[in-house]
Image 1 (cartoon, helix red, strand yellow):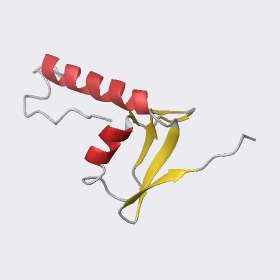
Image 2 (cartoon, rainbow, N blue to C red):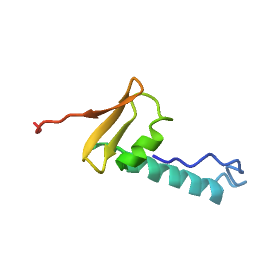
Image 3 (cartoon, rainbow, N blue to C red):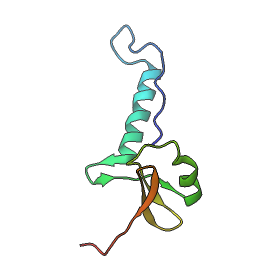
Length: 90
């Protein structure tokens, strides 16, 4: 989930309403959060195996991705990538 960096601008107009910049910032933030979080569950980032291999070095343990190449869920555990094996649900 790519969240926009906070911007340092005037927050509200003299009439108490948000400035255009802050309204756009908050709208973008909410749209980004709604894309990854919902009442229906979490959405994992969908990346290729090469993309996961490149970024996993920077990510903390517990980070998860959906591997578009293998169609598996991958998680970083104790500094190493592990795939989560699955069986049919339920």
